[in-house]
Length: 307
Length: 309
Image 1 (cartoon, helix red, strand yellow):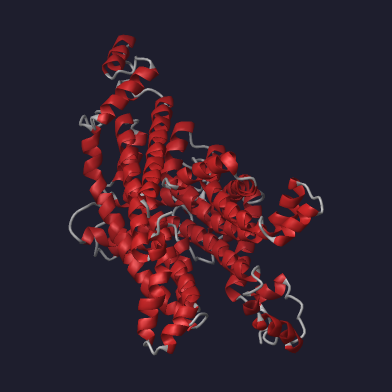
Image 2 (cartoon, one colour):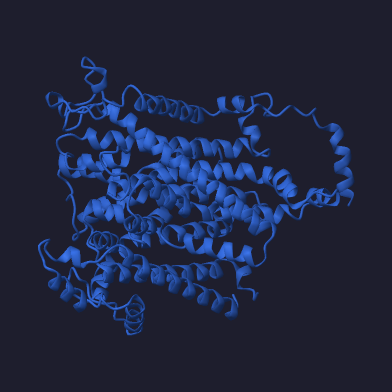
């Protein structure tokens, strides 16, 4: 991974980020004025005018955009109209909950997928493989919000073991994590299984076996390392989707993360929070992509060669 | 070199080539795929019924029969899966929802399949600046969470079926572009393409008669997987209130509407979710089966017992 290659990726990502922000700025302002949302229906024109001026909505759109760009360069993302606090604060308060939840889910899902996928690949089309394949397919097909509601129904409403929603002690984590676990697990098992079958048929595995390496060593050291590459790509895609806030699940479980924050911002026409949220998500995704590149280089020596 | 010559002689020892098994025969060898097809048949029947003689029952309010529990088979068959808080038949409402779910899924996937394949062919076959631009835009769309993108767009342009289909199609297009592009770049260099060119075939003929048929099975597998994915996203959006709007009926919306009655009437949430899961699973299973059936190297797994030797 040469420096120029890296810089090119970096600059491309920045351009994409900038394009996205312009798009969001324009689109969000097309939806209508927040003035109508905040003032009572019988507010007179003078009051509407006053609020619009106070919020800077009377200025031409390019002035608003320039002001907004200048603010961004100072990391000032504007005031949230709904929370009456800086939007950056609101977003940074919500972001850790989402990232933590995503990391736990993806970590558990990857670990389980590696074990199950590797075992399934050991005897393709054997009994374990068939069960694992069916289970992973089911995992990838379940609507997450539905399984979440069913979990609430069984474990919270009927049995009373777990809280229905909220954020706090470990018991609040069980249902959201379990609910979100299915899809990454289901998707990753299929990937690991396929890659492991291919890897186990490769000549270098035959060599390792011929040299007398133990079965366990062949599977988990020789084959797995190569099978991890496609898994990292897919796990990266999953991480991107999770970073966007698992909006639906956060809504179901009242999880104070960025997904719920953004859907609330959309419903409340809270421009500043929505923009700050999208910017934060875009930066996180940007970081994830760089992390994936590094992971590639760490696992596959071929990637480290200068291009 | 010697190995190559030996290989040529080795053909004499090979058993006579068996005809490739028919699709129906290969389907019969995979019980899960058969089950998936049967379920889709049930859904298709429900869809037709929901559009015709059940259409009125889906919205008929009957306060006497409200929140009836499911599986009481001595009652009216329309209430076998229970009724909602206004006494509307869940059988009829699920059938009506099948129409919405499948119409949106097929429209969005069809549109993205055609558009994505077209753009991917251009990018892969001609390359150049336009090809690069197409790929970069595809990367940009892929690099952003689908659901979030759909949320923002649907809120801005309004949640209606047309916008829903457009936004779902747009978020799926990049996958087809990437896959088509990658395959075309490889196929473009093969000998039979050179042969076609040497015989005077034009670009259009090379692309549509020689390259597209080879890419098609991969794209159809992807389309089947995407049917499942689009159904899940549509259900999620409808659940959040940014997809299908009441009084229209969709499975995702039904789950959302049942949520407030979760403790009293679990079936209002459970049944539509089950319908979503079984249908997405059916599409995934068929994609899985087709991936094997369409691959000459793996097809033997689905061949009859004597042919599999």
